[in-house]
Amino acid sequence: MITLFLARITWNKTRELIWRVYDPEISNNFLREIITAKSSSRQFDCRIDPDNNWELATWHLTD
Image 1 (cartoon, rainbow, N blue to C red):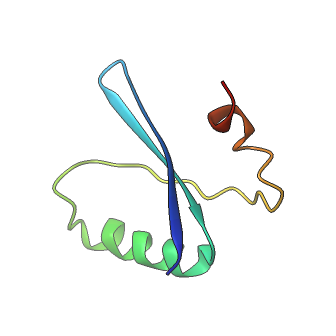
Image 2: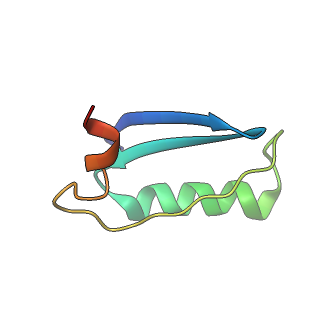
Image 3: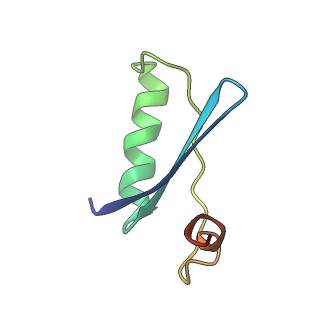
């Protein structure tokens, strides 16, 4: 699985981790397994948004 860590945002007792993922289906299956098995030591939410042109990442990559 090829991924690139893009950003971490911590605010109001929450943390958001933003990744660029080459094959989202693999990542989605892995995350769903963790959620279904309830095997994470922390609560989390995940979302995968298509962004082939990195348009959603622009905000995180600019000054």
